[in-house]
Amino acid sequence: MELKKKSNILDEEEPKYIISLKKGYRILHIIMSIFFLSCTLYFGMISFRAGTDTMVLILDYRDCFVFFIYTLNGMTKRCERYKGKVVYTCLFTKREYNLSDIASSNEKIEEFYKDYGDGNVTSSWDKVTTFYNKQGKKLFKFGLAYDNVQLLVKEVKNTQKSISNQKRKK
Image (tube, rainbow, N blue to C red; front, side, top):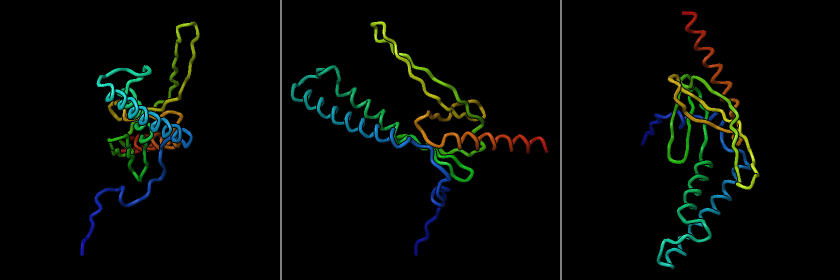
């Protein structure tokens, strides 16, 4: 009889909540991934048939591949909240943090400007929440396109408040 040893907390319980892309953004990322993957294949085949590394229609197959990886990164970025732990996953990396290791969070508005060169300037913005450890090093960040970010912000504040209360009592 084989006994399976469960050494990881993730094998034993379901997450309380998950921070991940909202459904509409996830669909957009899937469409973009399919588009960029097919462009990569198309431009790669044209370059192979031509026998040179020529740029076709301004987009190169390497550029399409970079955009494909970028959209995959956006789709796989997520954060799962377990009892006492936070697990951050992004493409090929997976990091586990104790909730007490996340010292603070910072919300700020990031503005982006695009100048088209003909006098037209467009702007866009995103509210980005960044989480830091005790040394002030950035752990991860999420924008408005992600669900449940405010739940983690609230839990980080409550955890840090209870840690400071415990230190005062001693």
